[in-house]
Image 1 (cartoon, rainbow, N blue to C red):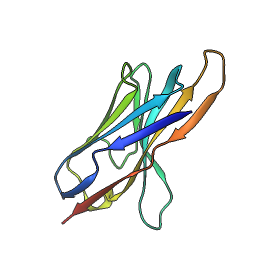
Image 2: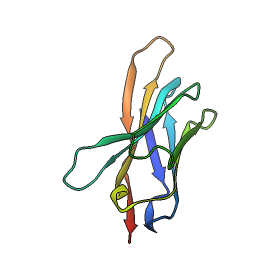
Image 3: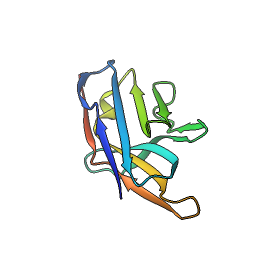
Length: 121
């Protein structure tokens, strides 16, 4: 099995910054994609940013220019640097990883437990 452990959430004022981390461990052969999703109260979970093994990234339009995703492949860890935070960024942030547990096996999706990010005025 694979476990994802997130850290770095908290309370921050609008305009401030936070950095989220997510470390994957367990039966990992490779991680094809790592990403961050978020879910605000009463809303569906949405993709915030994702990063491939080779470093290619994609972002939701709402966070472009403010958030930066990065990963350390040696540590199976993904980061989300969040700057210029807005009230509407308040949500539970979830880490996701698309993992191969063997070289020829299928890809499995794993989720972290979520970390709360609250932006105050």
